[in-house]
Length: 361
Image (tube, rainbow, N blue to C red; front, side):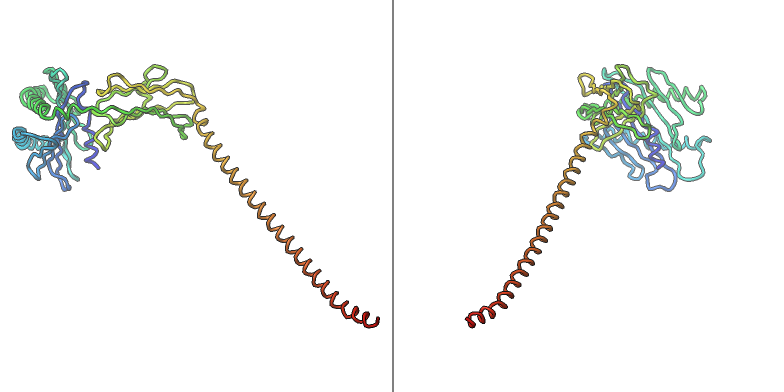
């Protein structure tokens, strides 16, 4: 679970500028008894995994459609073995990273950019330990900025800058441009987002929730905005907004807003590299609409229940009438039988008398 937390801590949108490309690698170092390799590195061009390394196999494994990767393999293996291991060991010997219980997990995320005009962009480096980002360095236009719990000395900042100018930045951007030449088709993939504006009743608050959902888009960079009566909704009223992956390699994003039963016009606007123009989806809010939408369903159910009840009642009435008719028929049959028996008996009794009468005559 802690490992997942670290991946979340070190995730941030790549390629900040629209139309730019990025190369990044994520280093995970684990010290202690775990089922994971001690050192693993994931290499990515934009959102495409192009390679993987771990200390168990001690080799760089290209991913995806690769051709002529020998130069990158030698260079990356050299960087990992000669630079990362001693660098991480040095980091973990500091007093800030001392830990006595459980496994130690330390991560580095480094990203560099090439803009759409082939100009080199920024480079960002993040360090994380025990679920928190401890240091963040940003290098752009030969300027290095630092954010962290413990601010380094002036001398240490000069060392950081020298390292970025002469080692980190050139190597990262060289790899980025090299991968763009070999994986340019993959990097140009575009999938349009499907945008919906959803309104649902919120039983907890008694109001409603309006959600703007964009899904199925690639690449991951998207601008999703909620408007109320033509004005952007303030950020402090919005919930969500996290970028999440789909199972097919595309992405999704949802932004939601809690509202009361007042009439407003809400619009969800999306801009994306795959769209020529921004995509707007509008919702005309009517507080009675959710209930109106339920009425037809309720009427249908009531009609079915009424029809069913009427059918049952008619069926029972028919059965009762049939039973009653059968009872009357049985009674009548019994009376007729009795009458016939009595008549026959009388006839049999009268027959001798008639014979005697005839004899007497």
